[in-house]
Image (cartoon, rainbow, N blue to C red; front, side, top):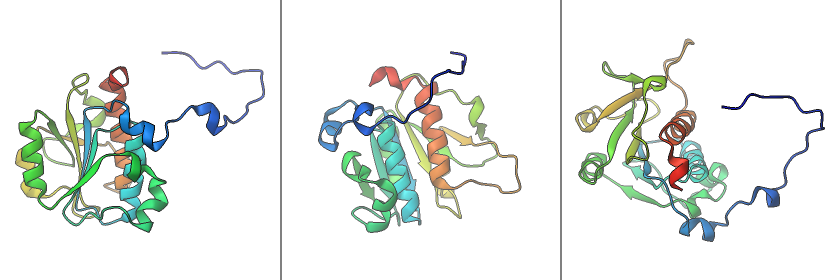
Length: 190
């Protein structure tokens, strides 16, 4: 870990050219992580778009849109995705249970993001380095469907200290994806 030391130089913003980002076409051919995102019955199109954008930033292997979760192309998804629906691989599945069963047989750890009686607090969860993991996010009101719990290898809870019992799905996804990407040391695999 490095220690922050203030600079005496004035700060300037970095231009998009200096960032050296991939085009959507280039992004398709670069290696992705073995982290996939499963959105189970997400209602908000803005949340869906935001998850696509975060998934692009951290090279998620796939985004699975399940149940009533809307699919691109859609104007409201594009508002927050800013083109990430063209770079991130995605598919729609009516049956989340069937999808998770399939991912489990393909070697994925099924990690539901939910408050359960056996949930592990996020800061206590350290993923297997570079392992296959499916992060399952549930409906904004009802969370992950109850009938999916038996498929879960782990439930992860984001600790919260205010009066609300949950944070927005797009915020949860950003927190979880960043945590898993860094603690699972996925950056070395891409």
